Image (tube, rainbow, N blue to C red; front, top):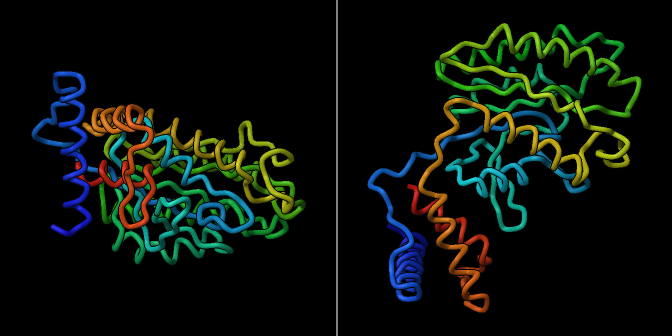
Length: 281
């Protein structure tokens, strides 16, 4: 056991004993089996990867899932830290669906997630009539994922709207075909559903000056759509003991606003998240 884990476990012990001493009885009883973390792989282009001049949905999505008490881990070949939170992903700026299809076997062999979120509608040109090829690539990715994990769940993101025209005039037609593809590929053992990111997304309001990449509002909108789709998955209903643990930690921080909870430069929030991760290993 490394030093970090020892610190977090000791901190949790102090949280429990402090709470017991304060209220006279335990507020939490940890059960013997804590739910195993559900792994999520986000794959796509720069809209999934993020960048310095625009926002990305992964961080607000992670916050929503954590706040709801879900025990999840984002995995992938790349990792980025933002606000002290490190999330892994498979976002490749400038890559279209054809390129992602070619990369997918290597990515998924090393990062075999329970759930895959795909948003890949950009980096093609309307005059090339790319819809048929994009749909074929998405179907290929689904088949490759199922060859490795027959019970994988895949959420196919229908592309956000864009004001970069005529380049992205094809996206509305693509979104219709992605919806059809999801219905055709969906099975009871390996769920495939379409997530409509275009509905309610206004590029005039929700993108940066480039008319393509989400601003903070746009990223929040995408996160909400992913979150709603995840919550509606039948096997995503069960919440873990993280909910009770989170309440305990939140109560302690609320009762002790001046209490110093920092370790190796981590903020109070990051210590809380690290405690949750340690306790659900």
